[in-house]
Length: 450
Image (cartoon, rainbow, N blue to C red; front, side, top):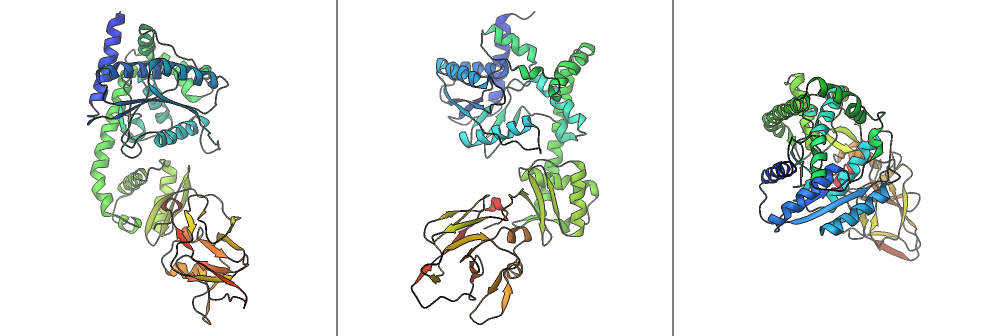
């Protein structure tokens, strides 16, 4: 049986090896993602030990409380006091997680935590997670149950790229949960136990308490062999992606992925390229059935497929991965024509910094809404009336962009349309007038590129 000292030394050696693999250049930001359990508390303890030998780095602990458990306020206070006693900078804050039916509560909580971690950390931060060998086994079995390929079966990497230049690091991935408890007890650490982890209605808990113990009893090295399989799947996936990268770049331009360049490829090659393209956009990976639907629509020339929080859309043989858009059909805002107006759902903002003066009656109440199919537009005084959306289509504006195109109106008719300019259908009265200079500062996240 391992001694207290040997357990402590083994953990610290594996922790140092994980940090060494990152090849940190100069002072770096090392962040511990705290949950309060024995695993993340062990990572924090190892980090405090590491700090004694490497004081040049900046160390930070972050706990995000999404209130999924009634005791979570007490856990948050426990971690505040723990960090204060440990003299480490920390952030403990509540996290609002809007729940929907698209994902499990646990998955939505994880996504929200990762998003907030991105916002709270430096661009080159190393974020340390407490996931371990037993977590890896559960993740592998869940992916297997879902029918995943090599990418899914690779499960969790010891080091993985995150947002920007950030990296996720899992220094305990080679240790089982039982070994972590041994380390935590040997170091006389304090932690909290989440009783929801005992609820076997949750798939991961079912595996943890009902299935994996049976497999481990039959095959004592089961978790280690699963970890090896996950690593081999990861290596195969990494090789595949490196071989596909040049193929993908040949079919990419500033407007998206060229679907017409898929015609001479096998179906397997097409699917692999499309998966890599979606992955490079930072989107969730679609199911095999959804991916097949995408490829079928790409052959037809018009693509509109939704999955998770994402959508694949096409325009002129180019496909783009976009976030799902909010329903803005009833969107309307008053505007004074002077101050910048923030538009909803990542559409950017409307400012008064344009170069084209639009003359309106002094008492005109300006309204900003989205373009409608019925909106008429006159490009020059006395000219022919056109549908504004058709003029934008001729300018190369994609359908989904035209559906989210803000316009300035007097409450009834168009006054100004981005890219088209002044609607000369409108005439001012003989009274006092004022000039406005609208300009749309667009946002690519809205599916509209600058």
